Image 1 (cartoon, rainbow, N blue to C red):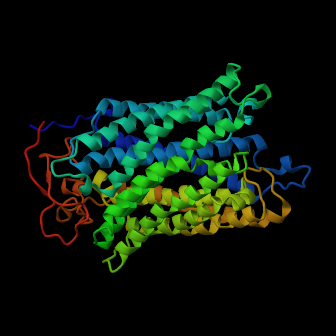
Image 2 (image 1 turned 90 degrees about the horizontal axis):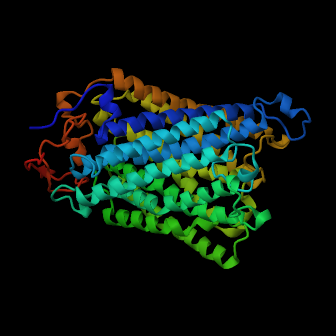
Image 3 (image 1 turned 120 degrees about the horizontal axis):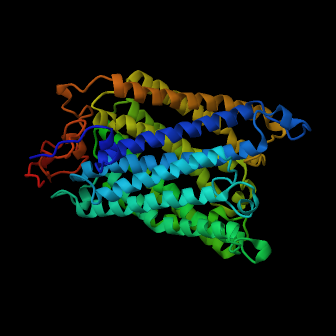
Length: 545
């Protein structure tokens, strides 16, 4: 007899159901997305009426003080990267989709899964305290500033430790789940590309997080226990911190990118009504990126005094890692070719992601060249590249992924009109608002500066206006999510809980899924992208409860 789903507030607090944990991750991460957007709004207001470097009374005319500005971009970066984009992918999407896509009742370690979420909540509380305390060490926590500032660096370290514990628990859990709980017939060659992308991301987390934990622990010891790992005046080396930090922090880009690549593939295959072009090459590209991601961190240190031979090797590796990424772009375009394409909201987000990501990717290849990188290092060029390749593109795709699986986890349809309005505002606001960052970088404008040279004032006003348009588009999207979850049209019986007519396994069960996921453990007979295949996707097999 199938187990019934418990009800009540207490059942959510103590739940080990992967779907409920996913929904709690979604609410928590969207909360931090809103926090990040609010901080961005204040910083853009500051730049709309910017204090100039030549004004002796600039601090009197500014909206926020220099220290508050530093604290805002510190918490903005931490919130958007560590509390929004990574956990929404490895928390929400991984929790909700992996068991459903592989034909499992739940994850391998449900209690460890719940513990992972509550570690994330504890880290979130510390992040809020850090915001109130105006911690201003930057999202990277670089010494020597993080050792000398009056801000409480321990808050930063403790938050990273708790997030790391959450990530390691999730990595162990989901890697084990994917390896051991696949349904009969669910071979590695029949896995969704979203599952492959999440698998690669968890492998990176498992390898990289301990290195980051060691880096910030030594920072804590230097600051409060008097050790000399990074303090140059007592024999330490601050560049060591950069090596340890970026050994994880650059692969963290692929922690975000690999799941996003997989989700993009799910959306494009579904709305082009075609099999993914080059499935095997897509999987190989994901695993190549997983490995090579750990070999390119030094391009963040080209101006930090590393030896020349290492800079040359890392330049070539940085360029080489663009090849598997380019394979994915080519395969998506080939999948779209002659497809029966439906341009609804999730598909627009997927195509918008490709457009923005390509701009960020091309500028990333430029960053990998030593000579060019030295010229634009720590300028607004880097800010533009980072936002295009990660923040803007990946956030757009995550919102598109929520739209795509919205009927699955709510049983309701979102508002298509407001979905498209929110997309177009975000898309054009992002591209027009952030492209001038590259021009500012070429002209030598340093990033993270509170005051602005007079010759760049108009450019910053222009950027701020279009940034507000992009932020407004995201706000419309979030309101659409909330309103549709409460008032949206319920899925009709004709839709059969699968409004997209997807071939993927998660759409073969009711929407929202029952507590036990599958009444009968399925036997898989076809892949998730075999559109036009008249044969059934699964065959029934009695479930083991």
